[in-house]
Amino acid sequence: MSIDKDSAGPERDTASAFSYPVTRDFDGGLLRRWTFMLTYRDALAVLRLKRRLSRRARIALGLACFAGGAIWALMPWGAPFLVTEAVLLGLPYLGRDLWQRITAYRLIPLPRPGMLEEWTDCMAGSEITSRDEAYLSPELIGEVLLTRTHLFLRSGDTTIVVPRSAIADEAEELAAYITQLSRGPYYFEAPLDDARDAH
Image 1 (cartoon, rainbow, N blue to C red):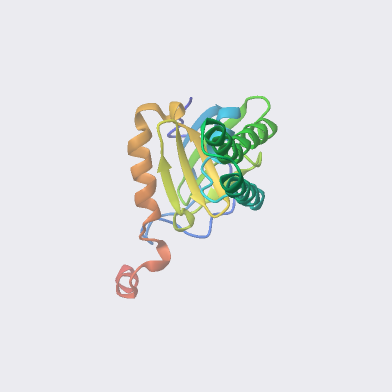
Image 2 (image 1 turned 60 degrees about the horizontal axis):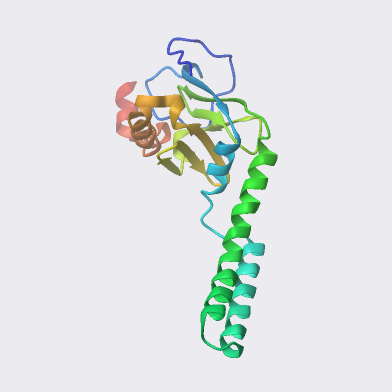
């Protein structure tokens, strides 16, 4: 892990919104950077964030329930019945777990560099599904999620993932800071009276 608090980042177009007062000088500059390695486990953590079952998973679960109902009607009560029901109900979940593990390995078969950056106008970081950085201005950050193993910044289909080991003791403070940024105020919400007083 490395943190460069005073480093100047490359010039780039600024993001669409800012979290600071209007009077601040926006230069698109880099404030802080954390670097780390992304692995298969990070990809698996992102895939497990999905709360909705895919269409295939819903079909498999429906078929398992249908088969379970048929067995309920046809098989006599006893140990074989209970084992069969448990297997039928467990198969979709085992299948989903196996699919997630295979997909995670395909996304990151070997460790690769990742980063989280704080710019004056946005947070930027590595995604699992792309080698490009995702730039999220504060009002686009929909959820900041801190788990035992990761920090996630989510916006629609975009998820920036940071292993908790990369931010160590800063994890809770950083998550709270980004959450506060995402709540505003944003530069376009400045009251008109304040803007007039500034001139």
